[in-house]
Length: 415
Image (cartoon, rainbow, N blue to C red; front, top):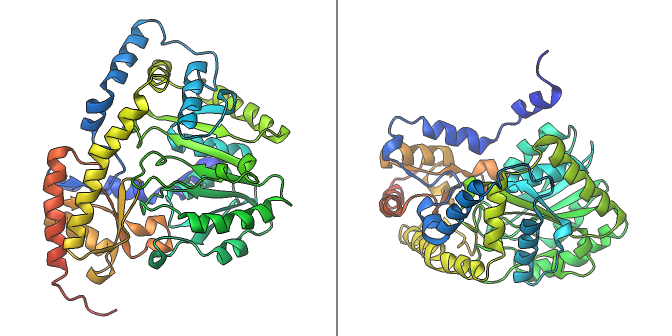
């Protein structure tokens, strides 16, 4: 048999979102559709705010910085730039604890590959970005993923008692993502405060236990509140952060990601070595001209002010307009306060698949069905309001409001 066991597991656990978006791309009328499905960012926004990164990339290529960097963890100036990124948010993480990855997905895969064993349990949330299952299956067979329910009626928050019940023997990783894909909501501070002693009680007797925080939307934050276990002194040394500039700096195609191992135990230093070795033996290093371009940006004096301006002038107005359009159409959803998505409850109109197909075939709009993200989102569709260009967003917003207004007039037979 030609294929390895790992390859067969990968084929057996495809990404449902990827399969759905691939099918959408083959739709005969795709050219006229407004795509609210895939998690891209309007490329015009990057050009407006970070065009100088493209120039830096060009100059790095011309200046001989297009060779192996010799450091698989990443060039020192970029690791220092990421350290500065954390400092900007009030957290001191040295460059030596930071390792580059190919986007956030690459970072999650690297962490999985280096800390998970067969029969380990990963506790994540429901809903949650579905690619975790398709990522972990090829890496470690028999790893179990359990999902902590988030409740729509609570604003997509968890019940602390259920968290306590689900932290069982064998749980190696608790995944924390706030703001969350696909809901766009954040875990509120009162729930976070209840989670800390529960998790600390478990961690005290499980030295290998880690909290894996996904910071992909850390700086796509509309209300300012941000919960991280770095703010819990008793748990901060158990945190591993995976981050990406894809969404927060409108550059998904650059694949600029990183891993920060916060702890300073011998086990954590062994993980440092393992991560760097993994990069060295797989990809050698990330694209070096891009490393130099991003390092120059992250070490500049005004890059974070520009990023905040972009969120306020580009992301937030789109969020507001999408929310207002859905409210006028009387669609049920929890208002997002971060990320780039609205998770709309479409149960009153039919199944998510029926609604998504109707949106495509009759109204020229694409969305992603919510079942990919877990059982708690099985009555929903995810709408990415940041994907279309400026012109197409206007067209899509008008179509979307009209669509749901008309769907509300159609009586759906009881199941």
